[in-house]
Image 1 (cartoon, rainbow, N blue to C red):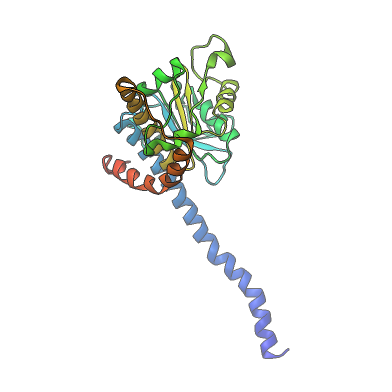
Image 2 (cartoon, helix red, strand yellow):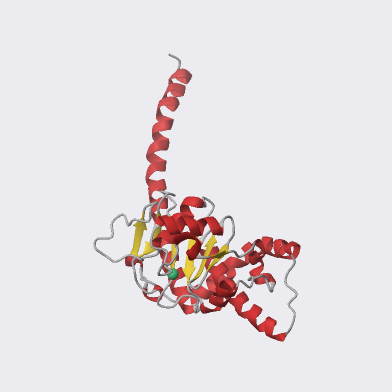
Length: 266
Ligand SMILES: [Zn+2]
């Protein structure tokens, strides 16, 4: 065998080995880093939503597992303002905790499980009881975009009435049947109101879901203020679509500001 042929054979045999040995630890550490970032961002999301007055002692926020998209992460049952990385639990596609170790879990975890099952595009979900949204949920008055920062509402804000899916309930999404019914009403929208209860808001990232619930809440208050003053000129569907297309680049700026108020997390 010539020297060149021997060298070529060496390359053929050695290169795949070299690739495996060099890429495996790197990809492992980057995936661990990604999981850790996701977990921290989820804690920040909880704290931010409490700090911004969108969540109080109740409500929750989740994120889809990047490594296993059938699963998601959500805190144990605790007030959002108190969540730490140690409180984050993994849940399966049915909403059962994978390893809760006896810790209490949110009753309404089925909201998250059902929407992740129905919406592969959704990476994060916020469920809130924000007071500003309740009035819209019980009157049927459409929540519509008043200004550009909430233009994503132009996609529509359907109202889920639990009575249609479960009859006379305690208003909570206690199982997958009710979760599926809610996901069906949400359909492909970013926001759905829940009659006499609250809302669900979804996003393609934690940051987008947080942005959307904060500005859904702001829009609700603005719409009520404007309605008292006179007839509202809402964003037209065309204006809303154009403005919403530009919102994505604004999300990181808002996230960094909200995050700066939280300080260090543990
Ligand atoms: Zn609730």
